[in-house]
Length: 61
Image (tube, rainbow, N blue to C red; front, side, top):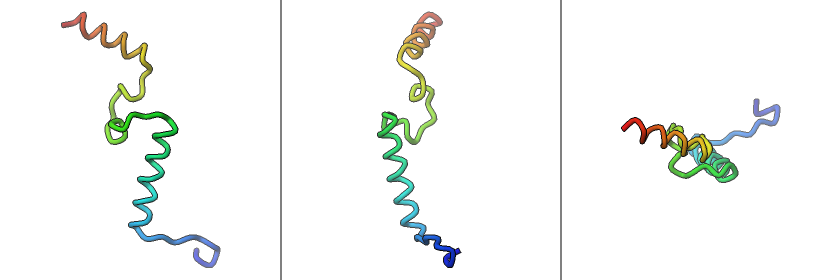
């Protein structure tokens, strides 16, 4: 692999690069910071859908 021109990095460098890239992607997509490590529906649904779901939730209570 190295003879074919592959680039080798340590696991620490890979981890740092992974988190840096993950942060950059989230910034480009305007994902809220709290949604990065959680699998919440609110981070992926548009505002009008969230408002409708909230209205339904309040009607059930």
